[in-house]
Amino acid sequence: MGFGDYPAEYNPKVHGPYDPARFYGKPDTPFGQVKLGEIGSWLMRRNKTPNAIIGAISRAHWRWQHKYVHPKRAGMAPFLQIAFASMAFFYVLNYKRMKAHRRYERH
Image (cartoon, rainbow, N blue to C red):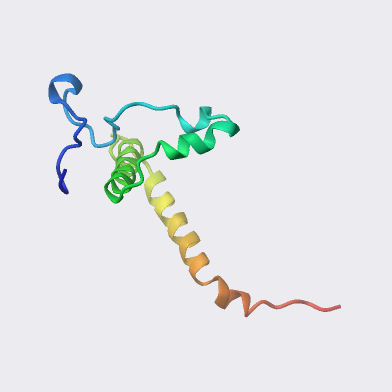
């Protein structure tokens, strides 16, 4: 499997048109239904290769695109989500500098 190819599990005769937001591998228990005692075995069943991680990020991105960006009446939600995510990201980056400039009022 090279970069930009379809997943190995995808079969156009079975699955129909390709959807980049769908996982074509063997279905497993969703994380929300895993019990505390089964978390270790559930994590061990995950594919942790770089291609699998990039594929998971890509599927999450396409799901977000399909839900918030591509509808006919998308609205302001994707723009506000990007704005708030960037504010949080830069706050975390600059936290050490901002912490040094705190002013405490002494009575």
